[in-house]
Figure (cartoon, rainbow, N blue to C red):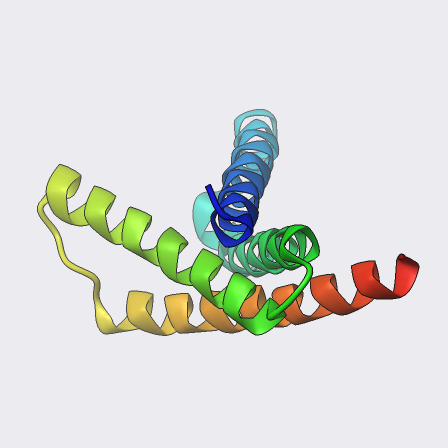
Length: 124
């Protein structure tokens, strides 16, 4: 596997791990408090953007060059995985709102990739 492939895999794994951790804590909050899912919409979106940024950062840091490409490929692969799950598993396509969310996720992952390359390069 190439360095690009390994970097993207690291980024995707990071995104899904962070999503699982955040989901676990949010579900605990909803279980043991009176908070409802509708009141957590912005917190979920913000944590998703942060997860994508960190995933892009990890991919860029592992790839060590072309951070926008590393982060972008990580964001695109994440979108494809979610789209395939939703389309094949739930028999639904993306809505316009979901496409806009995923464009934001792509931008966050690309920004994370650029910063990941530059910060890890400056530390070496």
